Image (cartoon, rainbow, N blue to C red; front, side, top):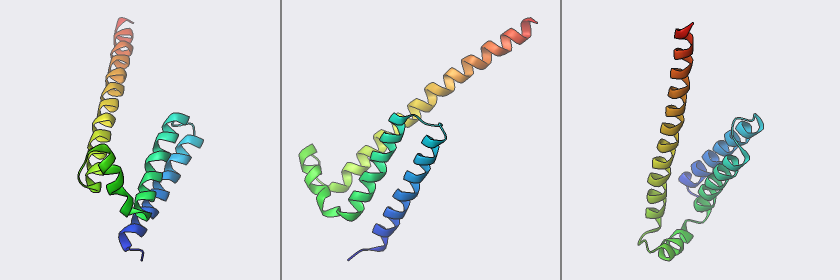
Length: 106
């Protein structure tokens, strides 16, 4: 029997994947980023359909509960994305500083 949370997860996964697809088609993200996000959203959809398989993968990784995999992966992904945003922001700040200095010389 399909639960409401499974339906919500699948609908959200498909919606998020469509956003990634549109960003790739609009050349806003690279093909590598598109594949990364496609993998993430496909994994969400598969886990929604087959929740009984998550303990199997948890045991392979040495984790006790299947849900913990997603908590660990989620926190790790968030840290990585914050790091990427920080690096991008630093580059933008340096570029802005360079532009301001050049304009101040004139």
